[in-house]
Image 1: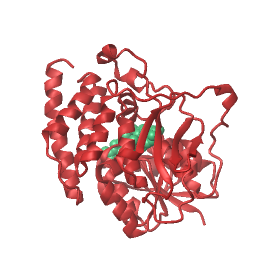
Image 2 (image 1 turned 90 degrees about the vertical axis):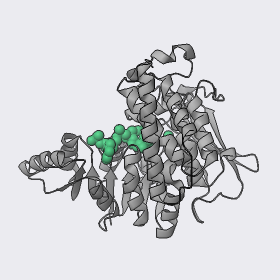
Image 3 (image 1 turned 90 degrees about the horizontal axis):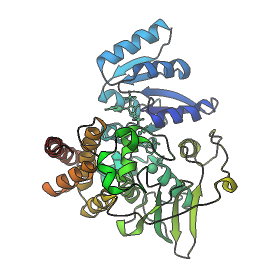
Image 4 (image 1 turned 45 degrees about the horizontal axis):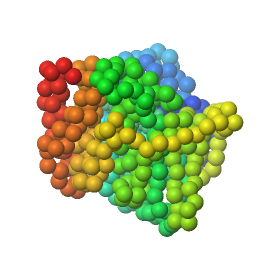
Length: 398
Ligand code: NDP
Ligand code: MG
């Protein structure tokens, strides 16, 4: 029996890498559904190649354009649109596994729908755990879903833990701490005084990874690592005090697990998302991913350093939000999304991203994240406050 897959966010960077791996194993995987937000033309090409039963776009207009193209080409894929359609393809009986690779808070409802439907979930969308980790993990537990991390660091940790025999998301005996590695992004060694002037293209020019623009900016501020600390907390059930961040500029070691006996296990590989994607798609088996073998002799040197808190204030903000608990991390994520979007559209400077997130976290109260409504209310408040803050920064020119 082939594994039937719904790929949410198929036109993005993770979506592209996932289809590359799936395309290498036509006997093993079939596609139930694909989704895009605006890029219906790329989605049409993907439908022509992979022939999913369903394709979803963000609006009625893009759905109409897609449908027109598919019918003209004699492709029978059914076309739907909107957030409710994303939730339907995530929970459909006709799919076994869901790759959750929509970017941002917009990816939460469909990832949660997959969790509630008891699917095998390959989670790239870290925002789902950052915003509503307790709810998400409870949904996974209650439904018997299987949660496999795609984020390279978390996938590395998963690979360094004992085979998942017992319940997921509780600390494994003997695990002392986990060590998330970070490249440090494009500005690791740049003079902080010059950071105010960096352009979106400079921020998106990651030294090792090719990714979507939002996560690339998050890597430059190290907010990405902060979000990953929160993600790791929920995935592996460890407190912030047992999650360490280490800069490793070569991005060869993708993360590590330190055990009580002094052993440290690491997962290594070339920086290419097809490795964690192939791992999670085939787990617990191993399949070809298309990634070139790691040539350690050519790399020769692996180095490590502690992150500089003053250079990367977003990292400290994320740790603080995790310590605060409740809706604080949903607010952190929402404020950051607004600020990064404003930076990418050149309305604010790079340094204003951290300043806006900091101001929003201090300005609002953080209550319990007991229901999805609590989380979405905090998300909405943080977006409003962040928009006000960024207007202030934009008026001040940065
Ligand atoms: P991209 O921006 O490259 O792709 C995002 C995908 O989501 C696209 O298919 C896009 O459609 C779709 N999308 C965008 N907005 C919406 C919306 N409002 N509703 C529904 N769909 C939407 O992102 P990435 O692939 O880089 O990242 C995806 C997720 O994976 C993120 O959460 C990121 O943090 C995480 N991740 C990514 C890594 C990477 O290497 N890229 C590594 C680890 C985690 P369209 O193309 O039409 O806009
Ligand atoms: Mg990562």
